[in-house]
Amino acid sequence: MPNELIKPEVQPRYRRELDPDLDLLAQWMDSVFEIPGLGIRFGLDALIGLIPGLGDTLTTLASLYILGAARRYGVPRITMVRMAANIAVDYALGAVPLVGDVFDVYWKANLRNVALLRRHLLATPAEERRARSGDWLFVAGLMVLLVTLAIGAVTIAWLIIAGLVHLIFGPTR
Image (tube, rainbow, N blue to C red; front, top):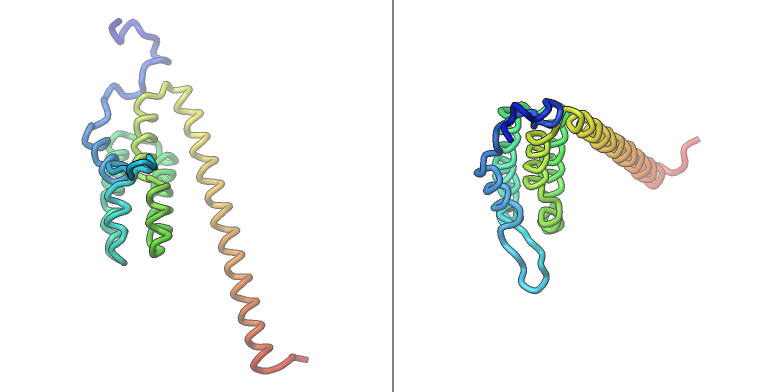
């Protein structure tokens, strides 16, 4: 059936296909290898991330390439913020030695971001609105989590400093 006969509200927003190189990049970064018998998949992100300091920075550059492609495809800003948050979480937690590399095996930011890009390309206008709402909820939830963590970190730091002052100088009057 030609596209002209399909109602506009059910046609994909953009009639372009996703660049297969983006899929390939995401696969190589996040799931090209498998641990035999366990079915756990991982990619170059987890392997390169083993290099202290430099590894996670290098793998983030590949993730930023996918984010740049999303901009070229006209992905809405809130979806790009969600994609950037996926990259930031991957970079921040992936930088923690060893624990971060285990996290990289689980998080798979590149596959998540390519899925968000594909969702945008294939969505009808109604699906696009629902997806944007979901993106807003994800970003808002992440912000609440970050603010809560920041408040907790400041509170713990204050309690530690107050305890040290109490130990060094004795009780204050």
